Length: 278
Image 1 (cartoon, rainbow, N blue to C red):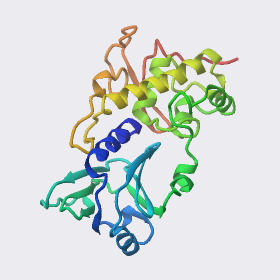
Image 2 (tube, rainbow, N blue to C red; image 1 turned 30 degrees about the vertical axis):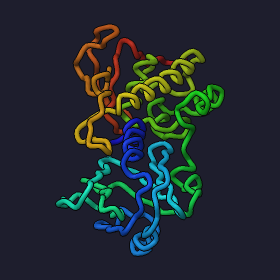
Image 3 (cartoon, helix red, strand yellow; image 1 turned 180 degrees about the vertical axis):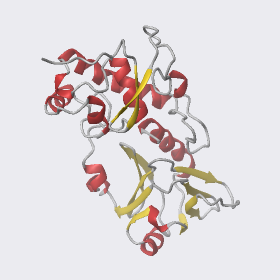
């Protein structure tokens, strides 16, 4: 699944490709991709619209147009492909943006889980999926005091809580495993039992890991490619995710894999010990 670094990398690629492009027409080949409005209205509304800018909130891409905000969530397998001129269309291409200059932006999604939502201009922050998100994982938004307060209120395993996107947005399965390893915290440690030092370290790890992953262009697991058709490079820096049985680079203990909330979870049993509070 594309996580925040991958989505940010897609955004940066699209900025280089489609800013200033004017939409001639839209072809929706799988209507369920469009959450709202109804597909015919979606197609008609976008004719003549220009892509002015593209922003990101959590894992949502937001295309800012003349009169609308187009919100796109890639979910499991979604990706965008830019083509300079007409070319063969494969069966997994579900939405095509035809631009007036003859180029196209195609939304490709093998599993068809991605969604697009068209809302009035400058109202994307009020979209239900965006409203519930926590702060972006950057120092001036992801504040320590609020993070500590949120941790103290939850008895949930720390991995489960971080995946909810409420205390901080952008962490999916891969990066939760990585930040917890970096902070030396067991994925099943109850959030409200974290000590002040651990909470500070965890916040720092979240900011550091996601920042480094963005700069590396994301992590390529299976089919992820950015808008330019390029793979990310952060997979070479993964310490626990997908490293089952390999030695921890800190202590050489074999990495193990368990299930936490039905999610495959990787950690070092020596560096990340579960602390039982009495």
